[in-house]
Image (cartoon, rainbow, N blue to C red; front, side, top):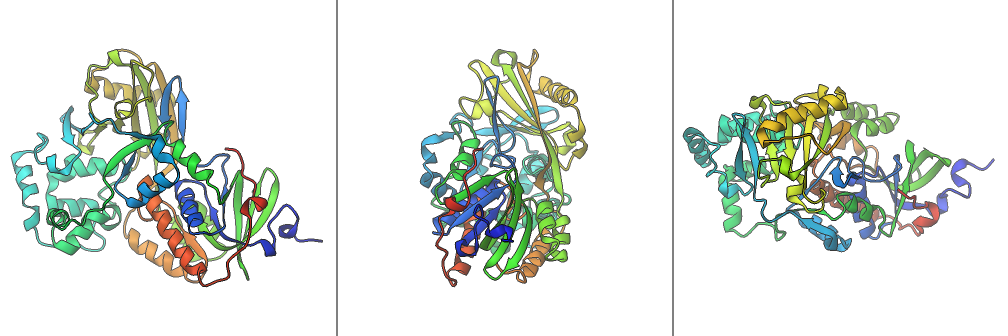
Length: 484
């Protein structure tokens, strides 16, 4: 009987491809895009019926809501290049030029904080003592240790006030983490690197500017017409990547040609041979696939915790909100004891996010600060957010739209010696040549980080394959592009 992987509807030994990417979230999509740009034949298997992972845009009653990332904050040339070469420049939705600050909650009131670091000292948020402590940062000696937490690092360099009023809400909000447990080197790699190199964060930033060593890529914040799903669709439909939705990878096996991957879907089981495999799935899923190959790697991956998040979208008639909504939204420090971590004013940042005369407010519950909020009913989540927003924003009236999205494993938490854990994983991976991990539990969780990480992965893979015979395969003949 002919083996399953040699049947006519599957790729056989003579039709090897260069790289199989497992996982169609932003990490996998970006990796696949950069891989095909290297001239490699690429297939991508995604277990869900649509690409993008947690990134998803929904149109609800005229409101454009985002289940995960709502804005792309870019300072990386890799992102600029990808957006340009995919033709997405024409679909960019820049942040409204009038939005120049965000707010922080301080003593139950909203205080504006400039987005530019240069204006930070002038904010009314700081006490005289706190402002003086910030100015003294260049004179603080180097210190710390490999296991230093975010709280320890920020307090040591900038003082307790900056931690409590600004850094803690950032780490607890957008990163859904706990600064008392998060690794400083893994969570704040750029800041800790500046201290190591220049002895001071502020001095390092200044020297970079004076030396003209800032990236040529301008810092900008934007989304896309139609939301972040526009980015996902562009990456999933790129020529040169055989994207397959609804195909769950259930096995990986070393092969003389590289790796044999087995997947199951509505069409049954199929196998494929690839010289290299990139796993761009969450740590628990990667652990499950790797357990039969290396139990130590699997256990290390299982040790990576994830934070749950509930996203509450509320739409209002603009006249029902007395606040000017003249910023990007607000973050809530832990010491304010509010039930939500932050609130994004999406319709203030980008046009077309709400019907005319209306506003869209997106709130974030849960994270490491309050993980049990994931279990709240829609009614409780919505009423809790309403009770919090009403006095802060001067809301009078019921919402015209309400929606709740939930993610049980929203974001990985870079706790403990996270970099040591990754180094141990990488050391073990050397025993499994041709296997790579590219996901948001390494090198940052933002969309920009994932796009840059995809490029780094593609370069590593291309460097390996440059020393091996190239595959000659028309990927779409092996894998049919599935509609999302």
